[in-house]
Image (cartoon, rainbow, N blue to C red):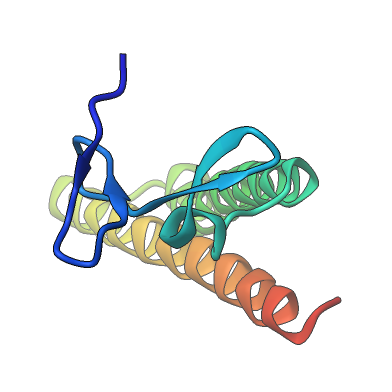
Length: 115
């Protein structure tokens, strides 16, 4: 059950300290309603995050493969192979982080433009 108190202005406060108001018989918070996303916007965000992660994984695999496959085909010495492996992992990680950031920042820019 929601415990209500009152502040110095006489408005009711919930136990969490939010100001409450009566609206058609329902209590709602003023501060919480301002930035709420619709269900459609939340679904769009989820789809965009999954898209960013999947394309980042594909890009990381491609970057890693570009470095590793020629080394396996040609055959390299132990230190050179290890160096290519480490370089491939680092570049793949960087590429995947870059891809996720790029997709999500572009989505956020489009969302703020109202598209």
